[in-house]
Length: 346
Image (tube, rainbow, N blue to C red):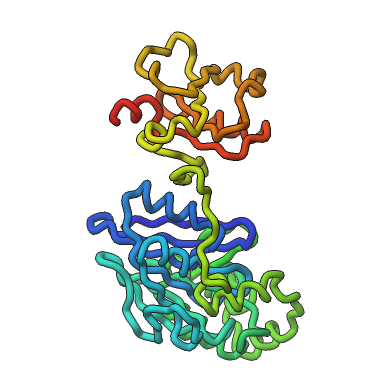
């Protein structure tokens, strides 16, 4: 199985990618709206087809990317039926089995943080994705969204702590950089529910907490009740000057074919050294040569009246040129994917 743990620093949210190495079908758990291009890039670079998006609950601290991922990929959206959210293709209940070809998850209802919390257990019980129900050395709060501390206690002890001790716990959040735990660790060391704490211990602990409401709750909850669809139902604006794809490394890229077809509308900045130049690009218009080592000193020579696409032998040095140009005030920028090596294939 292909497995990746991804992180959104603003909301401290973990997104999980699971995929089958043979079928190349993939699912995402708890994707974040602002990380759309990152997630699409990873799917593209790993040659995966997104079939399913699962949320563990209706989040209060970020907007899910479920709806927009469906618009971009045609995937299906799954969420607890008890949430009652719109645009959900597969309403889930306790005991359901869900997944993609080669990857199967058991659905466990784990309410208490919210009414509609689910945990997803991998078929071999080696992993459980607990959402906010159980965090690493913590758990989700229970003071809003139909939260109930007693129900949360029974969800953790009756649905998660009964899994094998070596089952890896992957939560929806961690605010201290911790990435995973295990059932045995949390049963022993969780300061709220571990170490033989009983229901009274847990409920009194949770009821004594005084936490501010999440900063984005007024924005996130209504959006997540639409599965992340914006209120106007429209896709966000994308760059319209080129067919840009953002790589998993965060670099905006265009294909050589697009540049060949649209070269009059852009400046092509070649950052190779002088001894690398040849006649193969002599027919190109708007070609400007400034070696990468000289670009910072000569950046004012790059015109701002047109978008700039950068080029080098392999696309590596030219990707660095993007940052130099951006720092100098250029806004419409893209790296030519694969550089000269990829160019000559077109």
